[in-house]
Image 1 (cartoon, rainbow, N blue to C red):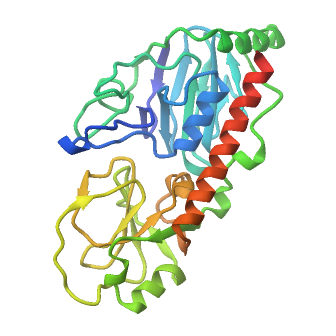
Image 2: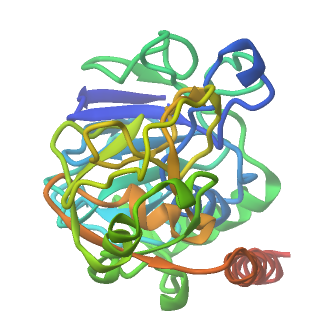
Length: 333
């Protein structure tokens, strides 16, 4: 059992999303940074869709009431166990009675806390993700609050092996991290997150030549009104050449649509199911984790790539993640 001592700014239970219900108007939701979520689960022996805690900007304080194997990936939110700093991107044993506390985030915007076995929350429409506006999924359909109690599911034999090894290393101390961690090529370089690769959207040709050029030559900043639904960007207004009517149609994670005032919106995890604004671009899947880790006020620049390049980059990242998964399995088989 894990007790929430302080909730933090916004801490929710999320998995990879609620798919198959968008035709009924139910959004996909899920984690903002799928890569950090998946690696956090791999490090504690979970499957990649096990729920994690998505921690935004200011993190919570959590009391572990039983021994646990955890990992923290994504943004650096200054985690500490019983007052001692803890490294990210590695398995960590935490002893019953210890307290995990997060501070202000130093790098990125969101951290992901996985626990071996996963959090015991009910599935709603085949997903444990929290959809805040509808109040469904996750922990009672809402963000975590003070004194909430999170149960965990039984961990696998694989996870038990890692926990046993770390407990032996720990001896009488309250926590111990593995002396190995995820290789640097897996860890997003948030300092470079201002470069976001995109492909042309379905209505790219509707925009003036000046706006098409501005999209990839000018910087845009993330507006403070941004949230899990979408990042509102501020910069050079983007204009269509002619006023055209369009019928609302399906949108995706990373769709860049432009309302009539010209400031683009990048749709994210809690995006609506359809959109009626012209789509000037689509963020490459490989760069969605970078987008998710941007904070309000940070600036980005778009770089145009082809669909083929985006597919190749995606496959290369998937190969790296599969290699990581295989390496962890070989170590504890």
